[in-house]
Image 1 (cartoon, rainbow, N blue to C red):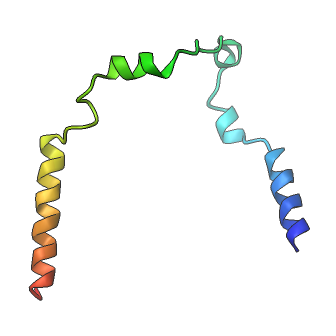
Image 2 (image 1 turned 30 degrees about the vertical axis):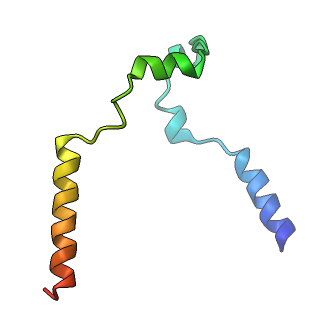
Length: 76
């Protein structure tokens, strides 16, 4: 049974996906690969506070979820 699962997985890797291929045009197939850059360069460009500080929307969502949890704990 395990061999059948491995065979099915291997065969599915060879499949074509027409809905994906239809979205690509010729320029996508001939486009150059992007340059690889060190991760430090990407992190420096992102800045130190981009992902670390919650935004107002996130803080509001947290407050709403906490209020909902309190209401559920109270039985209502």
